[in-house]
Length: 63
Length: 196
Image 1 (cartoon, rainbow over the protein chains, first blue to last red):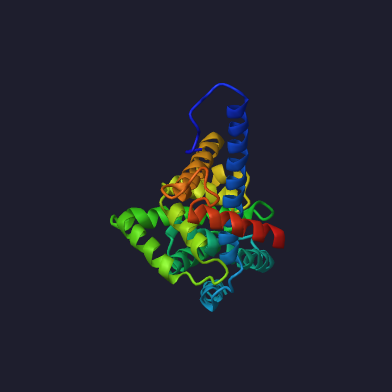
Image 2 (image 1 turned 90 degrees about the vertical axis):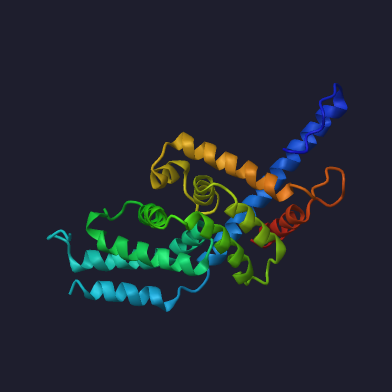
């Protein structure tokens, strides 16, 4: 957390800290979801034909 | 290279599984290079390398991890060959921002990509493998050729750095709106998790 409040004694501070931690957790979760989405977006793209053509050529070499 | 006892059936089974992994190899390559064209070149090289090395792969073990390791090794050996690559990475990252055509998620995805590209390579790959690729820490460690603890610390540093980068500057603690990038990532993540 970069936005930590300056430490002060008392309940208000620990409440703030707890809220801050919860917010950090939510943010990390959101980043995680976006990260997976970013990756999956490419995974779900159609594979360019080139890939299968290259593999086919490589495969033909063994015959 | 090919073991003599290897049958055509083994090759067919291998090929089928390899073809199924192509989309994942493309995605991993995209995050490593940050450039779609360079990524597909890398993924194709890795695919051919995997095919050529099929005799050394044990069917039934984790082919996804095995091919990711090949791709990663290829990436770093290409990088060593071209010394200027680190400068080119940044240019490629900037080109990617223009090239990305994803009407679903305009600003935030690009921000995330940019922040991701700003991470040291070893942190980026660790985070992608564990956070997006679905690998366990142990598998990621095997792919990266390092200790499990190293992967764990890289992932956690990457997460902190990403969050920091996304919040930096325009993030206001008490404002209703967080920084634009983080705010829209939060909103989109809500939508994505709701839809999924």
